[in-house]
Structure formats: C-alpha cells, structure tokens
Length: 297
Image (cartoon, rainbow, N blue to C red):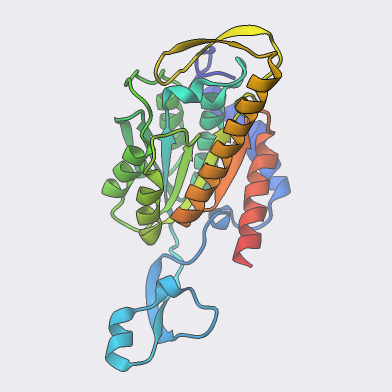
C-alpha cells in the first residue's frame, strides 16, 4: 500500500481492522488503553516519598514547607486523550515503491488511532511538513479514524528546505492543554535541536517516539554507478556503489547517524521504538508494548 495507490479511507481502515486489529486482539491481553501508558494523568493525593518513587512526581512546594519529601499520586482517567504528531517531510518517501516509510506511517497512525478509539478514548493529530499542514482536534469513534485516514491519504504539500522536527514537537506542545499520551512518528532525519523540544514535551506528557526506518538507509546495495537524489534538498549525486571504500564510508556514516539519534532520544528521556518498512505491523506493535512493559518493571 502506498499513499498514491487507489486507496480510500474506508478500504484502508477495513484492511487494517482485518489484518492488524484482529490479530492484536489475539496477541495482546488486557485493556488497549494502557498499552503505552505510564503513570496516571490526574493528581489524586500526596504522600511521603519512598525509595523507588518517580522523582518527577515530587511536589517541591509541599516538600519545602514540611521539610519532608512528598510525591503526588495519580488516578487514571476513564477517558484517555492521545495525540499523533506525524512527520510528512520529503525523506518519508524513501523506501520500497510498494511500502515506503510514508506508507508505514499511515499504517501505524491509523492502527493506533483505531485501537485507542475502540476503547472510547479521544485521538487528535497534527500533520506536519516544516509547517502545520493540518490539525485534527481530538475526538473518539470510528469516524474520527476515517477523517485521519482521509487526510493522510492526501499528498503532503511541498514545504521545501530540510526537515526541522523541532517545529512539529513545539507545535504539539502549543496545542496540548491537558496532559496526554503523545506519539511522535517520524524517521528523525532532521536538523539538530529536536531533542530539547522533546525533553520539554516529556516533562508534561507521556511521550512515545516511533522511528520509521528502511534497510536501504543503513546498507548500500552493490549496484554499480547510480544517481541518487537528496529528497530534502533535491541535490543529485553520481556514486559508484561497487567501490568498497565508498561502501565502507557509507556504512560508517549510517552507523554514526543511528548512534546519534538514539543518544538524542536518550537525552530527551524518551524511549525510541523502531518500525522498519520490512516489518510486520502486528509484530512491531507487540514488540513495542512488551518493551514498554519491561521498562516499567
């Protein structure tokens, strides 16, 4: 499935409900709304700090008044509000013709939205390509997922310039009034500085970062002389992919970029989950949920 193929929102959603949501029902037990969620969202009470408590929940005002460290406890809301911050920049078009990264973004976004709305939760979204392309206010129900699918199946406008993911994250922070569950879905090919915006977002919200990758970005195939285009800038370059030295340098640069993205996510305090263009979506989502459970334990 590609965004440009003969695809309608209803057909896309039906396919994902049959091939993904139904299989998730058999793979994951328990309430879907807690799949990615951490601590509760509404402050309920205060108690004295005990070793192992999350230091982010310390109430410093009460601690200063009493000279005893206190933490806030939280209650889970009956209704969860989730936001999808979706990167639609030119680099998302990279990958196999039948399933580039932008197609995977659509699949992940629609699957998450349907999983959450089935439980009565509200889902909103921001579509971004170096400027807010569209902002979808949070609502629940299947019609909300169809609206999101309709907007995602439209070609992204050409904004020009290199991607600055910080703008998307800051746009999200500016419209999120209430503490929410936030999914940032991107390939994280961006100008530097997004990790600082992500760290600020994490201070107030539960943030899940999903990075979309393609194996071709990590290892160059031996295809002789080829012309490659930088989809962000449009620059063309002729390279000899059969040159062992060039392939070595490419591999080293790709490995360095991978390490840098993981380190920046660590600095932001946000776990980074990867989904490849070659991944089975159900297995990828189950892998993320299981990893998140291990991190909580």
